[in-house]
Image (cartoon, rainbow, N blue to C red; front, side, top):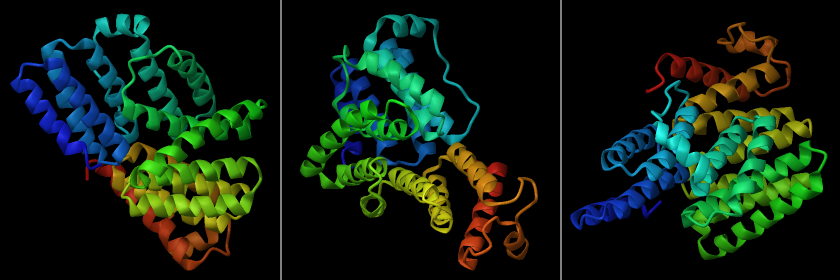
Length: 328
């Protein structure tokens, strides 16, 4: 988070010396780290557009192609139908450049996971793993980001697939890597390590430990201002409680996740989560849940506290406002 502004200085210094490549690298780092650090997605989208235009003008096509894959993920999170303006040369680069291919498959894996597409996640992580072993040109900041999500995905696949042991071992490797990074920078990596510990404990049916680590992950992400990862930790903890039949707690966490995704600007993710909550915690969609008294009769779990019912009402209203004015 603290390094973001220095990449602007790096860009300016590089351009002053006529070093377009170093300028491009600083631009990529600024955009990549902004998305990791939880910077508002609309701000990140605007920065990506400027960087891609710069790279197009300077004909730095390899970096531009990689940036467009990141831009595509940002579009998906925001919930826009807009697509990057790919150039034909980018397709040739994707077919021949393993570093670009790694970025492409990681971003597809990441978005599939965020939107809870099991089949898409499993397909794309296999392709990513086939590339990463032969990739040398991978920016260092990506190592931790990739390890974090590959770990989360591995533990998720372990619970859902028939080859669980293989995925658990891969998840453990990611967890150990994040633990080492957390020892050097608790601010940046502590919450990530806690979340991986929670997911592993969930896989091992160690539910008390899982609950403790989910709580720690949420608290750490909040304290260290990673709003994107606070949202994710709340969501994954909600699935954990839902699996245990603790529906009141699950709903509370889903609503908090929805709120944090909304603050981040991930309106596309908000839509996906909204649909899941409505379909799992209320009667059929389309009944117009806007009145707390009506909701009390329609919610499938009548023992929910009034505060949670009000929170669901607020989330539904927020979602309606978001759909009518996604930028606001």
